[in-house]
Image (cartoon, rainbow, N blue to C red; front, side):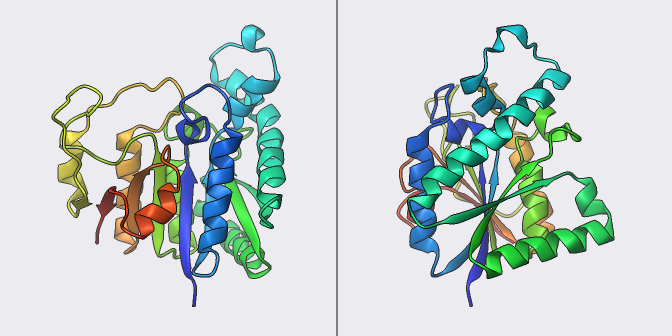
Length: 253
């Protein structure tokens, strides 16, 4: 029986350190999903709608207010899905879009309908690509970059593992961007204690800092689901982590 894996891709990973969506990175993700398809049912939680919109429209007339970001997300979301569809199709991977809000997890009927939809897509060989419905919800726009959403998806489908792909190898004992002697912490069981190590830094891209990732790990830990933070900027970041070829931070139960 296949294991269930939720992979969350942040904006900083999708843009590969630039201001544009990286088709090369999405190809990298597609190759890895294909390689893992015999052993895992994978659900993708993807940010990047606003970043995609910025590639296709002139942003000079748009401000940084939430309303503008919601409108940009509405423009960018179908374009982002088109990029996923075009690239994943080259690998024979079929995709489906699921837009969700936190209310979908609070209402029992919505939870059941959402779970049935995801399970049906997986059953028929489709990769669900989930994003927040930014037209009606704003929490992940303001803070989170889909970290919490991915944790809620993982608990909903009773995943075996949640992987948060970010622009950093994991949680360090101090911020590696500010301290050269920072050391990666590879295993964590007490997440509350780990919070004291966080020194946030604005990347200028995604909204999900380390604190939001720790909150996601707490949600999953309560349900017995492991959470890993890995560096999505590396090629083969997911397969290498699963094979123990690269270091990351694992939140154990």
